[in-house]
Each structure stands twice: as structure tokens, then as C-alpha cells.
Amino acid sequence: MDAIRVRFAPSPTGELHIGNARTALFCWLFARSRQGRFILRIEDTDPERNREDGETAVQEALAWLGMDWDEGPDRGGPFEPYRQSERLALYHEHGRRLLAGGQAYPCFCSPRELARRRAQAGEKGRAPGYDRRCRDLTVEERQSLRERGLPHALRLKSPLSGQTVVSDLVRGEVRFLHGELDDFILVRSDGRPTYNFACVVDDHLMRISHVIRGEEHLSNTPRQSLLYQALEYPLPEFAHIPMILAPDRSKLSKRHGATSVQQYRDQGYLPEALANYLALLGWSYPGGREVFSLEEAARCFSLDRISPSASVYDDRKIEWLNGHYLRELPPGEVARRAMPFMRAEGYVVDENRMRDLVAATQDRVKLLAELPDALSYYFRDDFDCDEAGFQKHLARPGAADLLERGCEVLAGLAENEFTLEGTERAYRDLAGRLGIRAAELIHPTRLALTGRTVGPGLFTIMVLLGRQETLARLRKWAERLRVTPA
RNA sequence: GGGGCUAUGGUCUAGUGGUGAGGACACCACCCUUUCAAGGUGGUAUCACGGGUUCGAGUCCCGUUAGCCCCA
Image 1 (cartoon, rainbow, N blue to C red):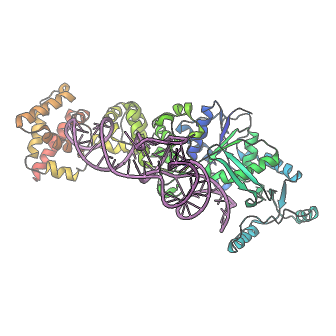
Image 2: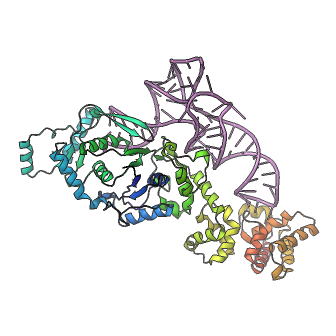
Image 3: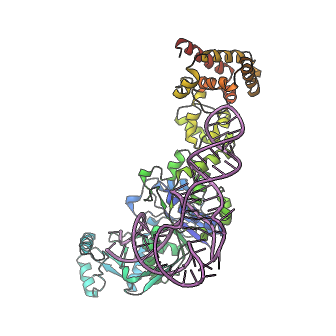
């Protein structure tokens, strides 16, 4: 029983929520750090939450982030099946065992009736939990209710007094008084198992050694603990990891922008950046390192470095991280990854050309999705000119002259002299002859070539644009300024 | 309504009774520079509050407050 086995158990909702992604990441890191197995289990017993392709989408998101799993619905394993919807017989079998052993009992109260009583209890200020009225029905009473065809759920007969101590690897010992727990439902009247029940049955049958999951399940753990006892199954270790909150400390939701792995991917985040950021939320690398790969984290991961408090998601930090990774990647690789974003904006470009463009721009953007706009002037000359820049550098007397003089010296360069060094020497010589600072030539030229005041070095832009296009744009702007003098 | 968890600068965190409370993002300034980034240097800003325990508390205990979670 000392084999480390950790599972991640998402619902197949399609989107992999950022909080769940981090839970998966911690599970994966822990398994890998201890030479254990990482298991994927699909919790699909709630038809409301299931989406077509949801399972595949979740798997793709995990794989995109860089996680792999040893057992799962797609690849099988020794404890198949790995979808809860295919394990119903196991839950029912366990239910019958508890019923036969007297640790569980049928409850004939209808959901509507229970809701009514809950509301009533709420009004009177009493605890809204189940009042256990079916707990002590006699054998005859149960028999007759069954014969009347009343549907029933299965409830656990939990202790009325005493306490359960949950030992948590992140939070230490947490005590729960039994008086505050009620006889929770194991199997609903329609035959579907509840989360707590299916989870315990599966975790045991799949030999899960460490239950690592979100903090929202900490309050469920004493119930599960009681179930393990009723079933006479050994307890696994538990580790409840903190939640991720929105900047206003509320629950992270749609209105806070991107909340799923897929959305981050579509915004042009790199998987290594997102994974790195997620690992950093609530966990710290020994020695305070902030930038590391998943493999590096797996080598030194430990649960005791997980912070017990919830953390607020910070878009600026992950943007910084993404920018960092973007700068580290070879231009060809950034180009390859950026292609879908270029295509989406309608830019047709081959990878070699794209690599050259990216090399000049990749350390000026934070997201892949910014590249189409950042590179747009290489694909079109009908751009709008930055208004403030226009007023400052072009809308003044002499600007057209400067562009023309620049154009002349550049035109004097042969095709093979139109290089970074060649164009720069030509421009600096010209500035010298005119008795002005090179900047006075450079700024208007940048505006004429790109419409912007910011961007890569001017001579890099010239070379990327090419001699012909550079000259054409300079002439066009000189002419335009002559027609409408400032 | 009850129970649980949590609380270090704006944010993520290091810190496990004795530190000038360290780092990162963000922010500000300066340097570099044809612009913008990147990079470099420096700076602003923190132990939620109140009680204890202790020679000494961010660190241990109790309470308050707030946020979150669960029962739903």
C-alpha cells in the first residue's frame, strides 16, 4: 500500500477551469515527485454538467499544459473503467453492502418535501440538515413503503455524537463534531451516487494513496471519513489545496475574464508560462525561484510548501511570465506557434518570413495574439498614422524635405548594400551633412514606414520591409505632406 | 442559521520565538537608447485588529473582524 497513486477527477464540462487545472498540476507534480502514478478519472454522473466532447477537451487541456497520465479512460489501466458513469454497478453493490450491514438506510422523503422542511427550518433558525425521520423506521414500515412503490434514496447512518478528526497534509488536524453532520445521501432515488459516495468507492478501489483536491471539499472529508469506516476501508492521505480567487477576492467567474485553460490558450498564452504561473500560485519553489519548468518543479515538489490560504489570480504577473517565455523561445518556434493567430487575422505569410519578423518583435509583445497587430505594417501600407506622432514629427515644416533626402540616400544604395549597417551609415552620414541629430531623421521616417512611434529599431524595419517598399513608403509620405502642408 | 478554512506591501510569496521582515509582479525614478520593449541601478509600500503566553511574537494561545468554502 505504499505505492503513491494520485488521481485528478474532473467533470467533462469541456472547459478546464483554471482552479481545477492547478489542482491537476499539484496532483501531477506530487505523483511525479514521488515516482507515483497519476490517474485521470472522469466524474460524469451528473448529466447536467456533461458536455459532448467535454472529456476530450479536458484531456487536451491537460496535455497542452504538459501533463501526462498513467491511467485513464483513454488509455485504460488496471482499475477500469475510469468513467463513473460506467461504474454504477460498483456503487450499487457498495450501497447494498451498507444497507445489509445496517450502516445505511432507505429514506423515502421526496426531494420536494425535503426542500420544504429545509425552508421551514431556515425560517425558525434551526439547522437545515436532514431530520433523520426515516432512520428509525421499522422493518415493517420500510416494507410497506416499498410496496407502495415509493422511490427512496440511500442514506448513511452516521454517528449522533463524537467527532471525526481529519488529518490534512496542508492544514493539519481539523475536527468536526458529528452533531453537525447529518445522514447524507449515498445514492439518490434515481440511482445516481452522490459525489461523496462515488468518490470514496472509487478512491479505494483505485488504490488512491493521496487524495489531493480543492479546498471546497474539506468540509466533505469528515463524511467521507465516516464512509471509509463504515466500509472498513483504510483512509488515504488527504491534502486540500487552496482556492484561486478573482482580484476582488470573490470566486473566479466568467465576469472576471478568462477562467479556463482553453481561453488562455486562445489569448496567446504559452503553456509553459501558464503552467509555471499556476505552480507558483499557492506553492513556492525552494530557494524562491520563480521561473522553472514543470520537470524542474517535479524534482523538488512537496506538499508542505503549499500555502494554506487562498490566492488571488494576478493577470499582470502571468503576462510578465508569458513575455519572459516568449523572449526565451527561438524566433522560429514563436513564429510556428503564432501562425494560427496570423491566419485568424487574415495575414498570409510563410514561416521563414514570419521567423524574421518575429525575431525583431518577439521581445516587444507579451502574448502571441498581439503579434498580428504588432506586425501588421509589414503586410499593408494603408495603416493609420499615430496622431500624436504625426503632429510631432511630420506635421511641421521641413518634414517632407527630410523624408525626401532620406529617400535619396537610401536610393543610392544598391540592393546588396541595403543592410542594417548600410542603411544606418547612410542615414547617419546624411544627418551629419545636414547638421542635425540622427533622431530628427529617424522619427519621421519611422512614422512614414510604420505609422507608429514605437517598434523595433528603424534600420531593422527598413531591411525587413526591403529597399523597394521602404523607398515607396517614404516617397508616398513626402508627396502627401507636400499636397497638404502642415 | 450552523460548521470549517484562511489572514505578511496593491498581488503572489519566503519566514517555523531573537532578521535592517527577504524575493517576484505591479508602480515610481534614473541609466542604456533613434522610439518602444528588454536589460541594469535605486526607490515607495507589508506582518488585519484586540488581548494574552514569553526576557523577547509575523511566528504560540484566545477573541474580534473580514474573505472564502460546506451543509445547499
